Amino acid sequence: DRIAVAGVRNGRGWIPAQLYATALVVGGCAILLAPVRWWLRKKLATYSYGGDADGNVCLTATAVCGTSGTNHASSNVKCHYPGDAGIYATGLFATAVANTLLEATVDNSQVPPPAGFHTPVAALHHSGGSRPLVEQLRGMGATIHVEVRNNNGETQLVDAAELRSRL
Image: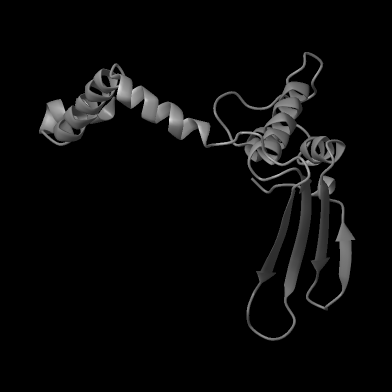
């Protein structure tokens, strides 16, 4: 796309575009050879897409505001998601985001997400903040704990569904 266009205008990108096209042609011809197909089948047979349903993904994140002095605001987030990080957790996040966006775009939605390509946080910011996505994740077995400490050292638990992005 841009590589080929840039190469026509000023000469840059022409060589990478030609190498890419050559790799496609050589790869297409190589797959016609029986030894290459045999090697590829053997390589793919060793990989398992099964995943581990009993696995867990645990996340601990800490944010600290300011570094001077001993009193500074901070927050700790501890998340636990069921399934391994490959197949199961990826599917959990994809399904939760898809369901949340689907619910945000129904006909009777008060504030639909903006048009175009956006991250889930930006797209859902005007459609109820983090509440719909957090509720979807919790409904699928995820746990999310947020603890906030203010400048005085007092800590309090905050519901992750109540957090709002300041976009």
